[in-house]
Length: 114
Length: 111
Image (cartoon, rainbow over all chains, first blue to last red; front, side):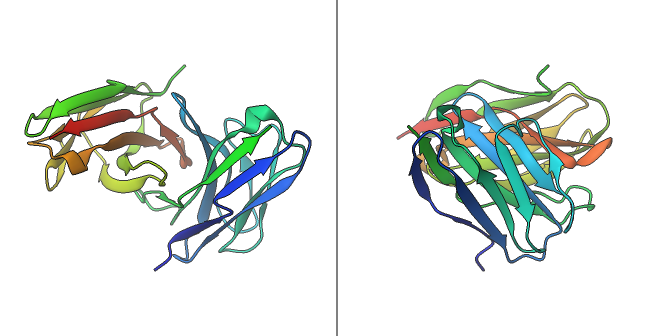
């Protein structure tokens, strides 16, 4: 059972380049999330999709866009990468609407912007 | 204003030395509090969900408890393989689609 799969695992970009981070889940979850994790700052929510066809901003959405392609897939796009976007990006999913249903995470994409 | 605070930031224990990690939250209307374990280079792995004050959950050497404003993760007789970063997250009734994370406690258990 794959759970949440993220690609790529590592990426190095130059300032101004664009890229898309891919995420897919096979648990039939309704809700999907993108977080970034930086040292000492914990996990911060970038965008989430409560259900197929909807997306909402989180705490730190500036510089990012998302697409909920279908129920399984949720992508994160950096249109013009900046060094401040160097981070580890995690995708997560949950059933949604079920009290206490936890987030299930992928293993992350480690992004460096030079 | 931080909604979820974890302490300590780092904890070093000898094998067998029991201790507790703390997670406190400032907003009322808790829907769920979650504990995760994160190993280096991996995503967080779910451990427990707690719903209401007084509730306790156990798994091997770990026991999580919940009061009205904080949760504790008690580690009894830890082993080196318990070394990891432990994260807590809260989900509130006013927006149950969002999960708010603390910055974690990095636990190092020495043999």
